[in-house]
Length: 387
Ligand SMILES: *Cc1c(COP(=O)(O)O)cnc(C)c1O
Image 1 (tube, helix red, strand yellow):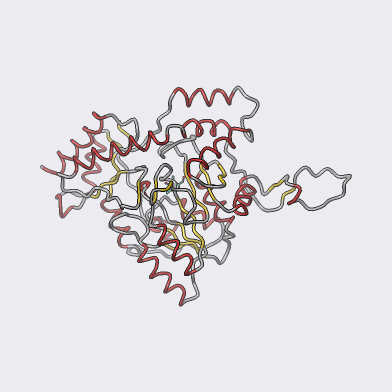
Image 2 (tube, protein in one colour; image 1 turned 180 degrees about the horizontal axis):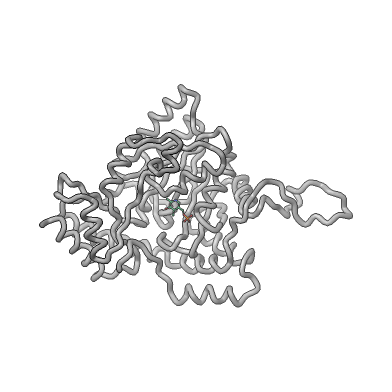
């Protein structure tokens, strides 16, 4: 079986984890800060807050930006459900901006039009969450310019995109947003088993992210209320937070994986280039790359257009599965999920995202994919698209 994505764990990764297991700190120890500093240094972000998933990072990012009941959060329909759920956790409502048919990211023209209508209705969003699908950055300069015009805040869901670049600078540097979020799930670019991170350049937001990660508790005297000197107050809860902490065991794996991040991304580019050249001769659509973005290539989705190749997405998908190649689909438009349809969203709401859903197949893409395995994947496509 060839999966669509998979972690790459080295002996050095294993040794790093074992070292923490033998140390005094399994959690709340020094390895978490080491990992956070490594990512901050790589990305050029001032503050990094490691948590136990990207979902948790998205939740505390919304909380740090004061998303609450009555607020609106907009995102792309072409994402994992967690990107939208984080707003619901905070009591806000979610809406979706259709995708650009070339990049599959949030379409900035549509965003601009939707903002102008929302302004007239007094229904502007508080936060917009662009998603860097496949690891290719959204048009952040344009989204940032719109945020200035309409007064919303930006969380980049960069779950796919650590190691990627936008305009020759690392994704996550915060130049065009308030907070960026990475995921360290095993199918993503680097892994901690489960894990995520929120990055920001704003010290106030960083402080809030830290508070929300651990119960809303602080032991910083300057933030604590004065209490009688004869009572012991070694911490105070000043906001409502959660236990979203990552462990030192996971952080050790993350720190070790960071040393190979560039190698992972370079290998993903090699695989993408081989797909690009093999697939150029086939009647399918390969992922287009925007000149401003240097993708981390978390995913390599092809689009199967029946009019071009005589096969349906379902037929090609089934042919892969029958051959033991576990391709995948990223994504079903979030609002088509029964939970979201129950809020009133209907089929037809974002036509580009729905067309993509009917055509996309994510091919195997991970650093340890062998040339032979990749040839097998390409052969299945050749057999199914040219017969
Ligand atoms: C994986 C993913 C998430 C959630 O990440 P977890 O670490 O599994 O919580 C959120 N958004 C996107 C776009 C993702 O791909």
